[in-house]
Image 1: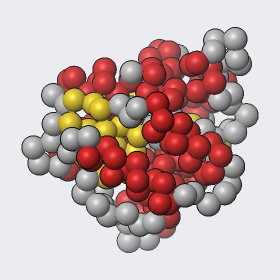
Image 2: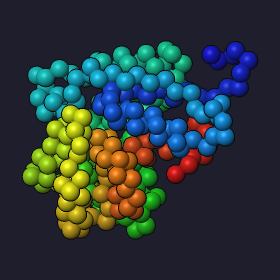
Image 3: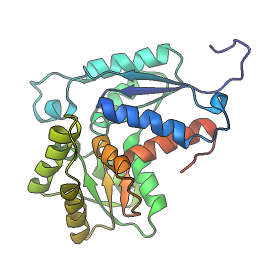
Length: 242
């Protein structure tokens, strides 16, 4: 607790469960990216891994479906009430609701879209065209192109056939607890590169799971979960292990 005589340091709240496996990977990244020589050097985190939040893509495509926003606001307010100074949401599609979530809490919600594009600009010299690999909800919402304009970047959106393949990997494989089709994943990356993209962004944290399972270290594949975790650690600790 604050004021209990221990050194003061900011607390990170993780609004997770969207999806649950990606949340676990994100929490693991926070630990691995923190410059720490002992347990006490690590960041205090409070994790809400709530898989009962309604599907974000379903609602974006059909407003008759259950709205995930009230539950996400409730979880964000819960994290704030528990003493969190920052909140991170390791889900790109959830950032369709970012402004409303931020309006309903008094602490900063660190934005995965902004941090990913900032990370991309910093990581790839002369970056201009980036391919966005994400759910159909994220792609149709336009959250990446909207923010990318501020960074002078052009976003390339996959064609419909590619989007369906991405949705298959994300929903039928990773979210279903099955092994992802790695050949299909890399064929999508190669297709975007062939379309003139300087790099591709994994704009879905289920794709981030594949990124870490395969230990991908290609400079032309940029991971949104890495960018968000790095931003959180940098904000709280002042430096980050990458």
